[in-house]
Length: 602
View 1 (cartoon, rainbow, N blue to C red):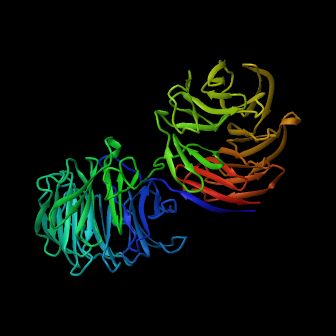
View 2 (spheres, rainbow, N blue to C red; view 1 turned 135 degrees about the vertical axis):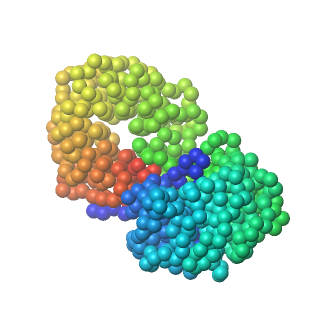
View 3 (cartoon, one colour; view 1 turned 60 degrees about the vertical axis):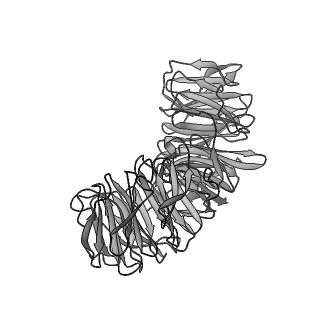
């Protein structure tokens, strides 16, 4: 019995309004790299569905950059720690670790021989450090700023030069090594967000929150010109990236545009319009070979088209925040994964998009497939929604308002669904409330309808599972109760209705045989912390559980000792959702905002 990782649908960059996002480019041209939470995400630039996630930082990672050799990535986090790790092995062996700053790392730059690196950001004593990559010993002094440093770059040709840009509205120019402060650049009148040397080292550009771009001589640091005259952009500029031949560059702005500049002429050749919403502000960019990538405040990654500036060649969407739930449904024979609030993914290619129309206004806590290709979702916005999956758009009418916040939803044939709300159980038929149980003498946590539509099981915080019979449009309590070992966290019937599987906060999974008056078939032990999600395999022989211990177990109903254990499904992150694509393919979701698929063999 074994498991193997099949697909990783990676999270988007974690974005913050008004904060630049650095995207790292691969010198070999194959990949690009960015951060989200504690994860560093490496994606294939040709096929972004191919991804790798590095999760070894204990704190939120802010920036990652390839060494010019391409063999290592240096990543920095909010605690000031830098990790330098191998890119060539799947294990990403740690080479060196340093703490050059006492606060958040904002940018990293390497010398072209991959032997020295500069790290800048926030800190108590200093805002920057430059050192040998293999010993950590200093090769210069990056003083000269009175506030945190946002950006650093090192000239990739000798003689070496280094430039920084800071919240104190200034840039600083250094010669070295050892790097010594030469002079201050006083051109900007607001934060300096980004500084970058051209690949040939002849020029560098500084970009500011004042919407200005200044071009300097790479060797002497003298000002040559401003790009675009008085203002390069109507909004702040967050990032710039040079063309490989050093003749052009792109700039990303809060004015929701990206401009492509002819550096020699000092004029914009193309203006890319990326939308009209606040979320369309452009906070990061990367020019790698023929690819022009930019990052929107939404986290979307845009591949720009020089021939059609108003429409990107492609836009990579996905999740940038924790995913709370997941389910799978086949459409025209192809499996699709539905996740979070409104995403759907082709399970095989990773192509994904969001439902159109206005959806839930808050986190979705559970989603299930109802009858006839319908997605039933319950949310903290106190509603249930029914969405036709053949249309992939939210319907304005198929929303049911609840009296209390729904915690769980379950659906069965005949248009039935049961919502377990705080202090209330609601039976719905054909998207309408038909019956409500109030004044419960226990705390109802989670519900499951038998596939036959005859029974609703409701699990309580008291560890009891009450079986209500569904008669016409009512729920009838006939006093039948079965026991879990602790407060119920999730439960589900097998697809054939033969078993009910339950997990609880005492870390136990229990399977009950429906036809034998819900007698206990087996108990399953293995979780170290509370399991919170459960899903039956289509084979009705196995079910998966996952949760707070970051582990997933796949249990065999007939034999508790026959199990598959996935120990590091989403490293350092709780498992939040499970679903099956087919008998041998399990989907897992997590707080790391990524979706993974695993091939399971028994």
